[in-house]
Length: 205
Image (cartoon, rainbow, N blue to C red; front, side, top):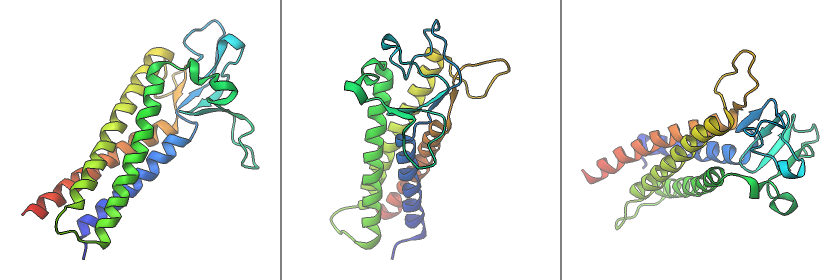
């Protein structure tokens, strides 16, 4: 029977995977409250050379949205970065594309850690240690999330003056809730990694 620590670790991995997917898919990494045509710091999620600017919009890793999602659940007010022959995606800076790649791999590694963790609950392998494998993948997830969050946070602050909290009389972009979900996913991945490390040590003993 699986120990309480193993079950807790699997639950933590589940939370990590869900949070990573939510952060990866939602368009709320940056909230642009204002965009000035003369301000070269603003058009991160835009295609300024064709007159497509991000005014008062929410910017994610894959799409941007103006206002809230419609009551019908459609994304009529959103635009994918891959639309119109990758019009916005081609104009994204290299660091943004790196964050996209890091988060995509983090989703895959977190799901692999979850599958291996669930497998370890119902199956016992004498010639292998599934806990170590799950721990390795969730540790990889933590590293990917940590790098993605740090790169996005630092570059968004340097390139577009993104802020954590709204300053008085400031119209700079704000880090939105999807970014903080990614931060939380990284923290949960670290906790999961530590728990699997402890389980692995117990198995060795």
